[in-house]
Amino acid sequence: MWSLGKAQAGFGLHSPLLPSQTGCVQCFARNERETGVIPSQRRKSPATPSTRFRGGLRRPSAAFKLLVCVALASHAISTRAQTPPLSSSDTAAHSIVVGFLGGFVRSNDTRRSEVQLANKLRSDYNEAANVRVFSNWHRGQAHKYILRLLREASGGNDSPEARQNAHIVLYGHSWGASAAIILARKLQREGIPVLLTIQVDSIAKIGQNDRVVPTNVKQAINFYQRRGILRGRSAIVAADASHTEILGNLRFQYKQLPAECRSYPWYARHLFKGHTAIECDPRVWSQIDTLIRDRLPLTESNPIASAPDAANSADANEPGPFNSPF
Image (cartoon, rainbow, N blue to C red; front, side, top):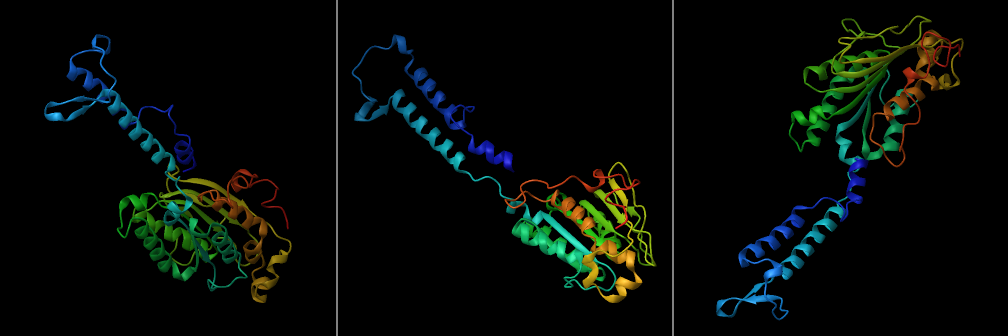
């Protein structure tokens, strides 16, 4: 969108001929053919802007026609130069971020990192992206939300073009991570692509498969820990590696809870320490924030990506910021 704006702003008289400019040359040449003479053979006559027809009417001279054509061409150039570049709001209905909470957590629980991230993205991007978080048992509502936005993007019609142009990111923690994969699989059956899925300590419900990422997902990443009663899935795989890139299976370890977990319920902090620690770990969610922003339209408040992808920042199999003890 930025390149289009620059091309329009830089358009000038040194650009290739516009259709109206081409017409100027054609109209001049046509006048020469009609008179049957070339300029060097034409007899000198008083300088008048036109030639007299029968009945007293005057036929415009070649010079007068050329002046008119040049004026029309100048108007066309100025009109093109004034055309505004595409704004980020033009892709708003196509840019969708949906998050899912784990356990029995409701979508209005602002203590949770999933909700905090959604609120921050919504505040930063305003109308440039559609961001919403759901409880994991409201996966059906999330699906309807995505379809509604795609219909709005195509003027009320559920067109294949709007579906193919969708920019969708799905993320979640625990049961919510599994819900993200299940929703991606449903979107696959409807021909809707997904840019990225993010699973944080993913735990599948009975009958669910959160391990295999469907082929409509372009990229996927998995954050997990392996201590305590609840342990997230340690590895995700692509259903077809030629369609989906697994950015990484990144392990975190914790000796104690991060300070951000203090506001969490006591049972979560004492019974599910590791599972809760990764949910409120700012290191994890800062990486997720970057991953999502890299796939959203550029805005004044988000002009460039702030950091590289998490998978390229450290080796998940070596001690580093992803799996070093807290």
